[in-house]
Image (cartoon, rainbow, N blue to C red; front, side):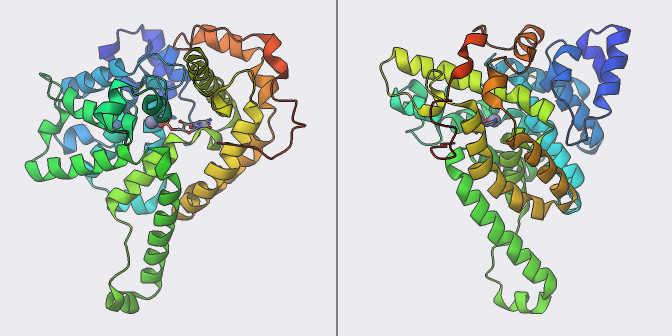
Length: 383
Ligand code: 8BR
Ligand code: ZN
Ligand code: ZN
């Protein structure tokens, strides 16, 4: 019924409904939502997931408020190649699929926690401007000055979410009582600030030790009750980790979906590299379109970032562990440079046309040889 907000034809509506049926699956293809929703993937994902968890009834939220809130979030996402509302919708449905699969999270999280987790995911890159924290800091941008160089973008995403909610008719937190509001705000700010990649290895170590503590307690409740000093796996920690894992989940998805993300993430990195070149700044190797390898970047990202965290995350969600491992095994062997250059298949250009959220910069077939000069060795990966 909420699809009435979208002005779709009946045919489109039934296609969309069929697509949305699969949204609970970890390997759902969020890209389909772009065309099926008239470019409103985040609005539709938000409405769908609030319905699925019956948050409208459990927290007494009117459809109009849910729609206005997610629509406003969606409009705040800029049309960057990668950090756009498709990424917001992707991260939101992925967090949902973690919670949905995990017996532990389903038992632990009540309605206000689910509400907070989904909103944190939907808003986690709100108003992202397509360049990273290092660029902000190195250019002394207004945002870097405002946030003292500390988690500049993440601070902005979270702050702007709560500022947006002050607008007439968009305060989705108004459905919570003051205690719930305080708790939801704590969960959301912590989880969004936790998406800063500089915290990545802390997340792994911290979550691993908390997970071990929980297992020890489950195995021997009395001994654990005596010591009492162990850090437990609290709800906020689970949500923070779920959001960070979802944020970097591209390589863990089906290869067909992952491929589309690689095109847009590399496009955005290279556009930042172009800006750095124009400004006479040093260009980080990953961002230099004339001097980098998509294969090395993605393989390094998988080996040093993704595998370590998904090993721990798979221990926490054994329901999805096999899925993570299967997808990672396929993704790593892929020839990303040739694919990015359009040599393997022409889907880049096709995808660019299909999703006009993509950058206007055209990718040319001639760029195919980049990154081959170092003999394809494994050294020098720099995620
Ligand atoms: P954000 O989406 O919050 O920016 O965090 C993801 C970060 O992971 C990116 O900024 C980037 O540094 C890195 N990354 C790389 Br490398 N490849 C990626 C990919 N395929 N998908 C997502 N992130 C990637
Ligand atoms: Zn981010
Ligand atoms: Zn993100």
